[in-house]
Image 1 (cartoon, rainbow, N blue to C red):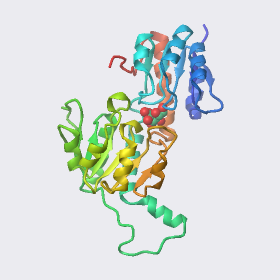
Image 2: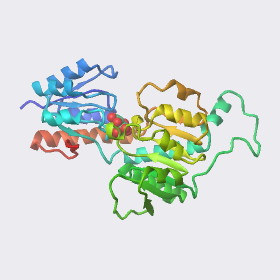
Image 3: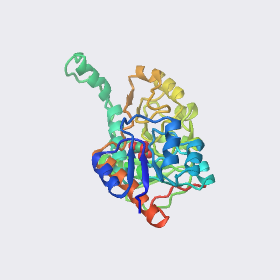
Image 4: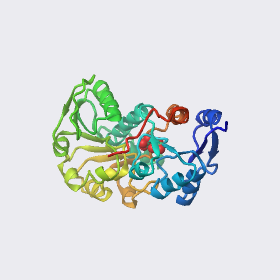
Length: 325
Ligand code: 8YV
């Protein structure tokens, strides 16, 4: 029997691609550039499975095209799925999977990295070194603020939020507060206080870190009102999805110093960066590197493979994305 066919929209690390080829007829995007809607439509029409990433917008046209051709399953290389039209997947009975767990630690590490970078002013320090502008050591040179003993507010205490909490609690003795739409009655290994609304979280946090999903429900959840509720000395960190923050409001808050700074790994119109952001000294930015380690990116590929193998063997999957919202 022929192996099922899989179209992979972006290149994976070598180990994962090699493994995928053992079980499937694989088509790779050799140019590794984001594909057009037309190309994605053709790809899903001509293959049993599509393995997209966050850089692909999987809209109803693509899903419908798959359904009218060979397409049966979308196995997303990544945990977030706000770039996939789940209602259309529901309508056309297309299964969707993602890659939870394997990227939790890498993303939590990068969150802590951003917290340290922005609060210790690493951007300004590096700029001085690279431009030969370091005036030399002095007791007041580029003073930042510490994580130790501060309060960390977590917006969304899912897998990644909890991994950040552990690092902050055990590594930096931080006090953990969180806001979650649903009540969390889990026994965590760290102490954490759930607050009733986002404003209470802002008022008491020295660092506010975002770990909720992107997409319509949370679009611009961090708006001017929320930013106004934050302490003047607080830092905002986002390693989740760019559209959760209203970028213009954040720029104003940074410009007016109504918050101390921000660390962003994700942006509303990736890979475009809001041009205003480039001028902000108190903003540290990374190009969506949350899960970017060799270990994790291979593990994400292996998770896609496990889901596809199970699907083509049994019709079931390991990591289903719930279609009904
Ligand atoms: C991934 C991410 O690298 O998994 C996610 O949701 O944000 C990233 O860490 C990216 O989404 C790959 O599709």
